Length: 321
Image (cartoon, rainbow, N blue to C red; front, side, top):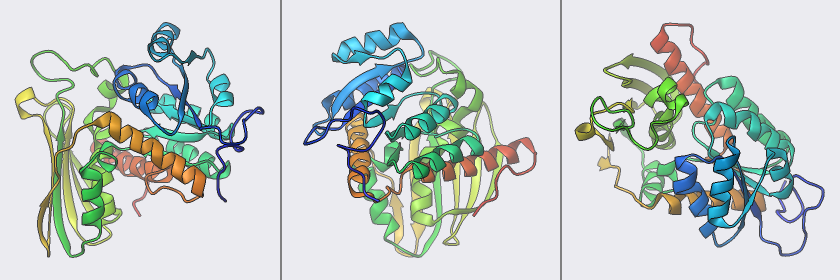
């Protein structure tokens, strides 16, 4: 089916005609303040409607900064909006995303969608059941020039191997932590769950779905993944939020029959978030699911959950494809 942003979605008083889609934001943390809210306010094709947060004073402050409504209840925000953007911890995001989908709202999700397979699958299933569009904001898939680079490499064949690293200094062993350090879920789940989705969001569309996973630990929260892909290629990913500042950085290198290709640098993350909103609106208007949607987000959670199970030595959490 196709989606009409002027008639579908939650709430009984949806406007009709040429009204611009209305977007609400859930979350008030540093990511919401620095990226989500500014991007939503600047977006030319929609109206930033309001903010809900678990801390009412923070929600009021963020809403006031952008001249939008503050909501005391997320369901009231769902009733007023066509699209809901999420800037929440994953295990808070997931149940609220299910509720938003049931209210008919299209979903602009953050990564990871959830940290359990059951919760991630519930979000994907809710989006499908209620006929709403979804996109997971995976920075490298929307920033430029990285987004175009991924599409270009996905068109090549003959891949042999790839190596990725995303080493953040959110919790460095010495010196001041970053602005994102006051995040209980990041402290608990580490780089595997916070930056692992970024690495997988590039490796999977280029090399194919993951068919086998092994994982090992290093210093701090460092995790090294060894992956096999449907194309037959092998890849590695080294992930951490606890790197020394001098060692922090991001890189990805592909090697295959056509040569060696390295991920370019990127910038303008708020602009990338605006393009993610464009993708949600396009999927909603056309009825064509975006490949970076909740279903892909659920697959990322399956792979990460399996890696986590390997690290703990427990039974594999979810079978690979």
